[in-house]
Image (cartoon, rainbow, N blue to C red; front, side, top):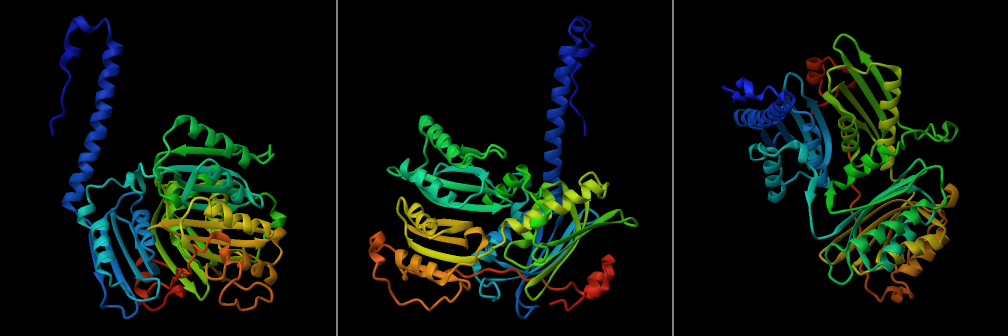
Length: 490
């Protein structure tokens, strides 16, 4: 390939300004190098397009998805994110990306534990991971622009009633919360909320109003805590919400333990990192309680910390999950020091615990309206319950909200508290999943269901879970894994 040449340097008349032209040439070379790198990437993927095989025949109880592609940093995260966002349950995963090629196998089911037969979902997987995706840069995965709503990112100290206060402020400012996700971990709280204007139903664009929203929310998040900071960001650029929450809490260093004496060793994830000197890998093993989206949270954290997963096996034994990863830093080196090892362990523990669903699960479905979230969270707060995690979605005029709640100071939730909330919200609206003390079966209806104008209708969610099983014997032999973790392939 012939590279363009800048001949002006050969002219003696330009020697009076060499630094100017050297800087110009340097800028041209940098831009040209970046352009050529992108063009080479596109050419390489044209010659080696991704291949996706979806097989509903070889396994009797799951859909097998095989993905072969040229390897690239972040491609594993892209695949896992696409499957997770489709609410598919990954029952097995065998991961290998050594030698410049990415070859993974995922066994997945729908939320009912059945094979995936929905043609729309299968077609979406083919388009998202197959040859048609070869011109999409992986660096843009999960990022999009939208004018339908305004995104608000919140970070501050966690305390009882915080979500109620935040939603009340937004309601008073004539904002409708259409989507939100709230995580709490290690005394910190992070949230990403999508709001619209109450009157227009579109994004809020007035700079003065946006500035006021940011100022008032910062005051609420501060809560008098001068030790740890608080922040609120209003933006039109919307990232993948769960990835953004991980990034926000990681930047806030929520992985640093406040007090090791308060750690519940029984429920604490067991994470180890050891170096395999023969292969220059660092081997990360994780044992913890299995839950939905566990694989995504771990893979994202490793990728965001600039580590590459070369091989991995995931497994579950009943309610517990076992995962093993063979990683290197993006520069090709294994974990180099004890300080780096401890940081990896702490960050993975935090990633696992941020989404842990502790406490009772309250599910609510109703017709959406302005102030709905504020009213519901106020009732929860008035009954002395704390929200540890929340998911709020709106689709087709319906609001579907999920809250994970616990008693004050970690006390068990009493049955009479749940009954009080049921009476206030209405039994045709609220579904409770969990085991509060002496919880009685709910009556068919509530005499106070008119509290919100009878706008609620009942619906419950399916409780998604991720199940991992043992890798095959041949897989262990091929990649030198410990054979005591072997099991049936399907």
